[in-house]
Amino acid sequence: MASVFYHSILVKSEDIDNMNHVNNVVYLRYAQEVAEAHWFAKGTEEIRKRFLWVVLRHEIDYLTPAALGHEIQGKTWVDDPEGPKIVRNVELFNVTLNKVSARIKTTWCLLDANSLRPKRIEGEMIDFFK
Image (cartoon, rainbow, N blue to C red; front, side, top):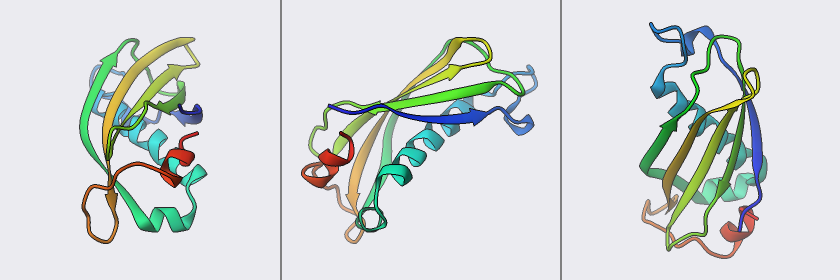
């Protein structure tokens, strides 16, 4: 269904833990950063005012540790929606090592910004992800 969106990230000193690699919690922040970059790159101000997203679930596979100064290429796409839910896939490719650092699947729920109630993903929101 969806097109692929890319977003670059540079590993900073605050991302590093006492084992001298990117802390596992930071990978979730990277996934959030990639998702937000996609939302702001493709979504109009009008659509961002009408809709909000909340996370229902994260699944993450840690594959290759990233370290200070590594360049990460975030890649994201979504699966077909189910009612108000959609699964966003994020792959964090470590350009420096030429290996995938992590794969994340996040289940998001679309909300109407005024009522804060779940909103079925249809019409313009389907078009957003194409």
